Image (cartoon, rainbow, N blue to C red; front, side, top):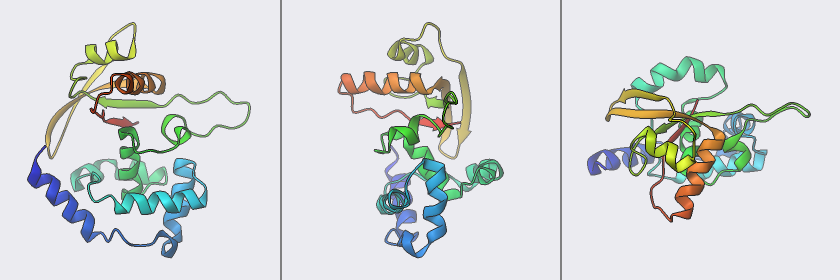
Length: 181
């Protein structure tokens, strides 16, 4: 971890006024409700918790420029998008919000797809395959950001859950990065 980068992120989060009340910005809470399947009260609490987390990760301007039009079409603003990225990092959100989008009654659930950042004890697709008990190795993708190049593998919600369960059983402090596609 780059200490200077972490301090810069914290400083930027402080500048964004972590004490701002989502009740004074009703559109924020109402935006989060359908995006994350929260009640209005849950949405307000999640916004407050997110804003008070001074070490929360932020996306670079370049990253936001790349995904902005697609994410805004889905109803996200930058803050909601950054929060959605934290969902795969054990943020303590409801299983419904992290694993499956809402479905209509009688319809089969839509399977969520994630990119798993290959790092730590899961630094190869083969290790992710082993951790999840998959019959074959997941597809590998590469990308880059302001902090350098990264490698990812594509997994579904069941594989994500299996990996998180395996890490939990092994009492690993490692928290994998999952990005919802």
